[in-house]
Amino acid sequence: GFKTRKEFVSEYCKKQKQLKVANAKLMKLYQALNAEYRITGLCHRIIAVPNLFNSGSLVFISPKYTQQIIDDKIICLAESETLDDSKRLYQYLNWTIRVNKINKFVNCFSTKEKENNIQFLLINSELHDRDNNVLYMFCIANDIKSEKAQKWQFVKLVAFAEIRELVSDCALEQIISQ
Image (cartoon, rainbow, N blue to C red; front, side, top):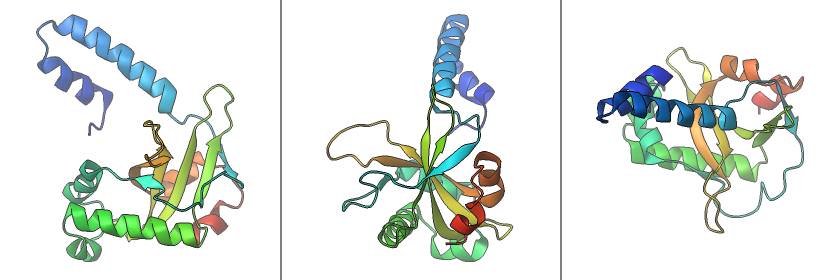
């Protein structure tokens, strides 16, 4: 993944012969994706989400994201020694999602914007970052829609401070403590 828009655009443009045309096309794509998926306002918790706790796998986890977590050394050293490859981390995250789903500790939130309403899940991963902060799985609605596809996709691990900036729910600290 790319950390900034500039990094994303420059990498794409290096591969193109017509730099200005490629840059303009890519900027349009970036702006469209940004408008579709960027959470810009405060959010609130959704209490009743249809089919959230039904049987079946809830969240798609891409192997490239689990590898990126390991490569970027996001999780604390003690946990990273146990979860030392992307397959093991995937199994751990998938298991954690299932346990949280059974216990109904999966929390769904929504933006308050009517025209660009984005829903997302927060699930306690029970992992910690290098500063020993608890990390939560941040998941958005899956952009692949089919009968067999999971309804949600894992995006990244986030600490409480990052969540606090997005979510206005007054019960957030109680939700997070589960």
